[in-house]
Length: 394
Ligand SMILES: [Zn+2]
Image: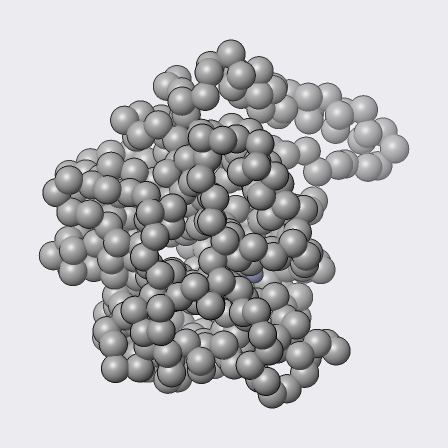
């Protein structure tokens, strides 16, 4: 098996060995606990996940390599998008669900191991970017930093929120490693209608087609006076509205990754880039896992995406912090996107949320994909704008 990163093998090997041993240790633990009726979460990945990863990588190995691939990794309820370029790799968020149904850190590491085995020419990640410090976006920070070389780190500079432990690990890692560059992205640093271009945010320089990574939004330092209140918090106090939003362009192909940005901030984003082409993209990471407040019609009209991907858990896992609990993705968001999208997918019958814990079936024909419906989704875009979508399946 090829090494996934350029950290000394001696440092990595025990961790990898431990991970390989984990399923065995887990079975032992299960045997030990089954007598008293308990089974603990163990950090293993299911055969379904493993088979999906193997299938995807054998299909991806056939590509000509001169493309940009966005891997929406199945991490349950959460977000982790691996951006694969001809000469580099960037990871946006490392989140996911950790409960008795699913262990996202194990799934994420299994995916990255397979990725770096296929792309043994890449020596680790050029960039790890956290959109905002919520645990469904930051859970796997330590796991990733401890297992792969990462040369650049970006976050929004905040240090509180449910995902603060992960974000603080990232910030400490930057302080402890002089060869790792770090930058916090604040809205105040972003040029009015051009976005932020920065060598730490965009460290990937490929010779034939150079991907452009631009930040369009970040931490907001003073309250814009956004109206409303939810769960006792103003929109300014809501961490989602401080998400680092990125646009990636690769030749004529482009994508928008909004993290969990919500309606009031999306309206300001639209105002800021009105009259520019920066929000006009082919691929959309559907904001806030398809929540009712993560996408608005004006954004859909500005983007007119060809392909949109929800990153959420499957609706049938009924527990707290799950897609089922939040009702993700909402029916009105699926319909709103389908209205502006001309590209189709093979029709699929899915469950869409009407509200928390309430779903109904719907047939989706527009090119909308979801990790909770399709497993990991890989969108491959060529520089001339052609694209294809591969899914691991569930
Ligand atoms: Zn989230």
